[in-house]
Image 1: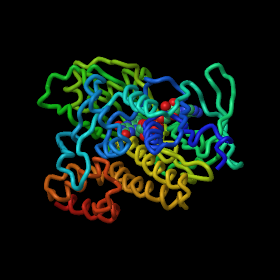
Image 2: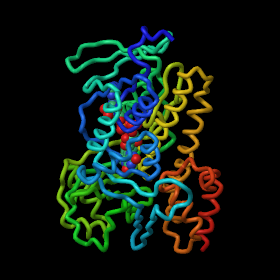
Image 3: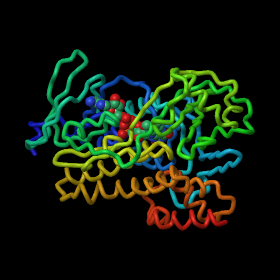
Length: 417
Ligand code: FAD
């Protein structure tokens, strides 16, 4: 390749988790990496409950020690599981009892600080970051991809790289510019959320080491999250079909607090809560693409497919895509023949498709009946626990290898017990 013709080996669009992790992995292998990030960090982002599977990717990138070191200072909350609530029923999954290998604990993080930590790590490893610059155009027709960018003063310039990784999240830059966007099969849902000073005193009723997911008392397809952070703060939100919010107060804060208080246990827990951030709303976030790669580019994380927030799988999928892309690109740069479909897209989709089966079954209520089943073999529960911990690529787990069939049988068993 003619190195004089390019500014760097790889341009990464966006410094979210997929962008910073892939940049660090590629720097570890000696490639020159330039990240273009539209915003300045720390900035707010949603996606605050991590899964233990993430830690394996952060370990692979050499980023996990710094995360552990800074966790307390940055208010990251140790997380060892998920607690589900449906009316009077409760069901706790402790990731330390999961099936299979791999880290069993992780953190719940304010993404502003988490993303900044990862991005600064990538910088320390030698990636350059153009903060406040945005990618605006992409030409993939020549020998090398050519990207158009604008700096903070609004001045346009061009970037040439051997390869472009789009990690622009909901920005979905290459899908939009290259017309790869496709509608998701999931119905349009809306999420309303905020941060609270929770002032929760009943620690015996509330395990801060777990995300708490509550099924709405009247609607099986509406759920509420409570994600504790350190320093008495938590994230609280509701996810519902977009029409659900009609009839609730216009004011978003009143609306959110009213919906949270419709569940008796949340009403009790949050009785002294104070709002710590104006509520935000995101609608219609599920997305898909016609392809995850093409000549000179690949799509990472949310720039590819995004399913649904219910099992907190977004950051894990983003980091898995980073890990797969870094490995394929390394082989490609070393002159090996690579097949992006077989080596990147197919293995990524395998895990995404596993999550999809469980997400669909959550919303039709059948997986909820598994979660709240009274009698369950500890072995099967450990396998389900592994999926909730993010291990959707571990095909030694039957619920990963043949998700649909095994889940269907399990639902029937749980419902007939
Ligand atoms: P992002 O984190 O979105 O980062 C993309 C970056 O690209 C941003 O910094 C952006 O500024 C930058 N960018 C965008 N456009 C441009 C441009 N033109 N030029 C340069 N830079 C650009 N996931 C979890 O793991 N756990 C959760 O608990 C969870 N909860 C969620 C709740 C809701 C309501 C939703 C909608 C999602 C949730 N997710 C969760 C998913 C999670 O938010 C995403 O999957 C995750 O942030 C994707 O990471 P990413 O690296 O792909 O993109």
